[in-house]
Image (cartoon, rainbow, N blue to C red; front, side, top):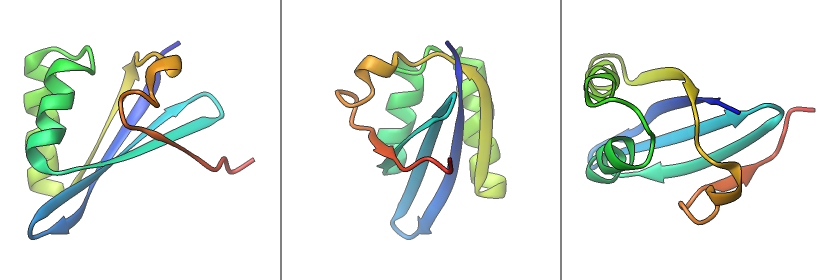
Length: 89
């Protein structure tokens, strides 16, 4: 089942980014430096390179970006470095 990625800049110097992955009622979070974020998006997100480029450009310009219909396997999110965050429910 696909979820939604929300990425925003936490700190400008050194750059640090938080990625939230919402999958149904569950939410997962991970913090990256720019190189780690780019590597994750290119190699682990299943997104096309052109989509990753667009996300990173929007992140540079506005400090945040969102991508829907991202399919990350929930059973592997912990292995990928994500921590489950509390639900609003």
